[in-house]
Image (cartoon, rainbow, N blue to C red; front, side, top):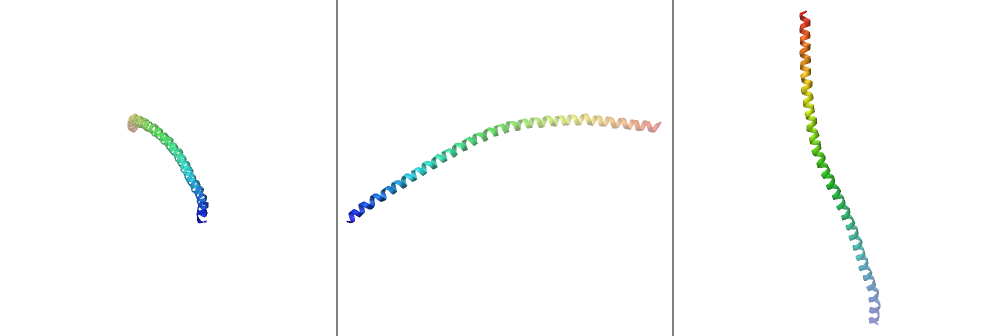
Length: 102
């Protein structure tokens, strides 16, 4: 009688263990699939970031060129305007000086 009870209980516990193994395997496969999708998305984002960094480097070189160009324009305009203002003051002083004499 003990033997019959053992054989009856044993098959009942076995399907539940097989079901738990199948559930665990299914969960692992689902998690691996999700991880694979996340890694693919991360790889795509890294490629986008690399492209943006390349573009930023090119733009930084262009900004450096533009900064030098604008600086040269400012220095040139300061020199021209500085000479004009010096000449203008000289003329004013000459006019003031000539006006005082007459």
